[in-house]
Structure formats: structure tokens, C-alpha cells
Image (cartoon, rainbow, N blue to C red; front, side):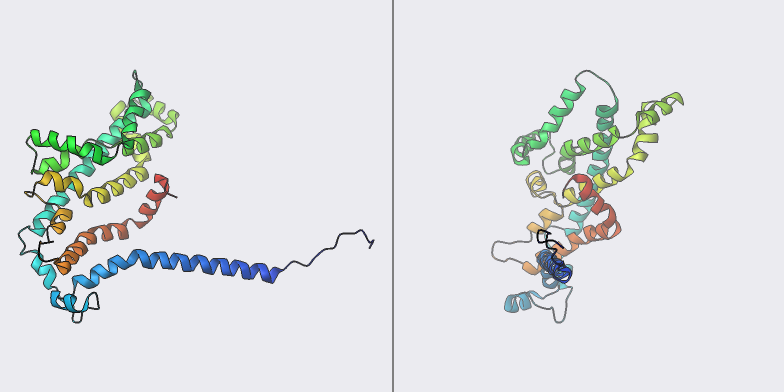
Amino acid sequence: MTADAPKIEPRLVGGNRGMRWLGSAATYVVLIGAALLTLAPFVLAVLTAFQEPRQFSSQGVSLPLPPTIENFVALGERRVSFGEAAAVTVGVVALVTVGQLLFSIMAAFAFARLRFPGRNLLFWVFLSTLMVPQVVTVIPLYFMMSEAGFGGEFWGLVLPFLFGSPYAVFLLREQFRQIPQELVDAMRIDGSGTWGILFGLVVPLSRSTIVTLLLITVVSHWNNFMWPLMIGQNRIHVLTTATASLQEQYSNNTTLVMAASVLAMLPLIVLFVIFQKQIVRSIRISGFR
């Protein structure tokens, strides 16, 4: 070996393996900490919901020994019926979900596959409404619904959200544009019209995206608070406003509020257990990384 030959240093295989192990351990520590921080409010809500008000006042949040269902029973005795609010919520979410999916599918198909003057301009104008915060439009919308006689009525909760949403139209339009034009042409050759192509070809091929939008719509409107609070006018309540009404001027009723919160969370937890794979896919489709 000559004096000018480069020296080859031994690779620190053990050191690299140790660094990778430390990096993985640090990642898991951060993830576990974030999971505990995220789950803590739910655990506290469940513990408080099964505590007696006297125990909560004296001990704060602690293990309910013995656990009691007194708070859940008391929900049915309040001025605002929690059962009625739950029924209204289910009705609103069902109608809004069906309406948004149906009208969004039709609008997205028109923007993706039909040709008409000003199609792209109309689409981008419609999509630009995503940039407008809800608080900007909620007051004019409130006056419109009140003047139309829907203040404090069930349809006042439903109508503003029934006819699709810009986000749903955008997501479905992008999905519909990915369907090969050859399939559409083959359906037309077979004698199918526009409606046959839409519901016989496009919708079945876009099932995953439609289920994603269904889940997003259900969760967002189940948790909607500001609009029902305004248009309900203390005459009609959904779960969120019924839970807020449990707070009184001279009493926090914390155990009652937590019991109501637990009941309101249960359907969404069941939904997550059933559709957890689809929910993860919805996050990926939505673009949240």
C-alpha cells in the first residue's frame, strides 16, 4: 500500500444502530405524550360524568367511588329535553348529509363532465367562497332565515346547509375527472343518458370519496354549535346547544355537562370504531398530512 492511499475507517455499525434506536424511542415518547394529552379531556369527562355533584365539589375530578348514573337520569328532567335535542340533531344531520351528498354529486358531475358556457369561471367563483369565514355570512344568513319565518324552526337549522358545499363539490369534481373518458363514452354507446352515467358509473367508481364526505359531513354537523345557537332562539335545541344550556347563572352543573358530553360523544365513537379505516383514508384524501 502506498503512502498516498486513502485510509478506510471502520464503520460504526453499533453506533448507528444505537442512534436509530434512540431516534425511534424519542419518536414513540413524543407520540405517547401527544396521545395522552389528546385523550385526557375525554377521560376526565367520563370520570366526572359518573361522579356525584357533592363528590365533585369536594374532591374535584377523581375516580367515582361508587360510580353513579344520577347525572344521566337528571338530563331527562331538565327544562331543555336532552332526548328531544338528540332527535333533532339526528334529523338535522341525516337531512343535511343526504342533501349535501346528492347536490354536491350533481354539481361536481356538471363541472367535471358537462360542457356549458362559463363552466370554469362559475366553478372558481363558487370555490372562492371557501375563503370567506363563516362569521362573515352568519349574520346575513340569520336575517334571511328569520325574515323567511324559519327562526326557531327545524328547517332553519337545515336549509342553509342542504344544497351542497364548495369543499364537497371540489373534492368530487377532482375525483370525477380521474374517471377515464373511454368508460363514459362506452356507457353512452350502450344507450345510457346523463343520469345513467352519473349513478351507474361515476358514483360507484367514487364510492370511497363519497363515504369520506359522508363521514366529514356527519361529524361537522353533529358538532355544529354557532348556527343552531343563533337560529334556534331558545325554542329548538340540538345536542350542542342543549349541553350549553345546562350551565346556569349560579351553578356550573359540571357533572351534568360532562354526562351530556359523554352521551353526545358516544355516536361519534361508534362511528369511528366502524369506519376507522375509512376515516384514516379521509384524512389522506383531504390532504391533511
